[in-house]
Amino acid sequence: MKIEIPEFTNWQAEAEFWDKTDTTALLEEDGEWVGSGRVKVAENLCRHCGTLMERHYIDVTIARGRIFLREVQFYICPRCHARDLPTEQQEFVVWLEKMPLPEMVAA
Ligand SMILES: [Zn+2]
Image (cartoon, rainbow, N blue to C red):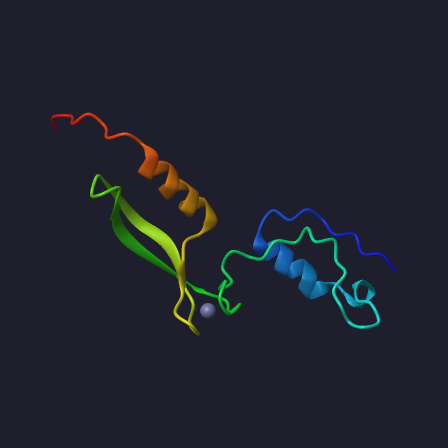
């Protein structure tokens, strides 16, 4: 039996798919995973221990105090207390830190 693996738009859809799908056809006799390798690890799983991380929000100042961000989403692992940012926010922060200082504008 071959399993058609759809393109997932978010991790909830992917988790739901794998919950409902019988994956025994994807297992070889020694039990090793032989999936397509296209499945990405959900970003809210701890990279250190694999535990589902808790979502939190915080107001932060970044770019050496130039920019104030409200309710930035981040994750804390309840098991090993590792912290992580969602992928798109990591990219945003890297991008922002590279921006030149804006001209000071009189309020
Ligand atoms: Zn962890």
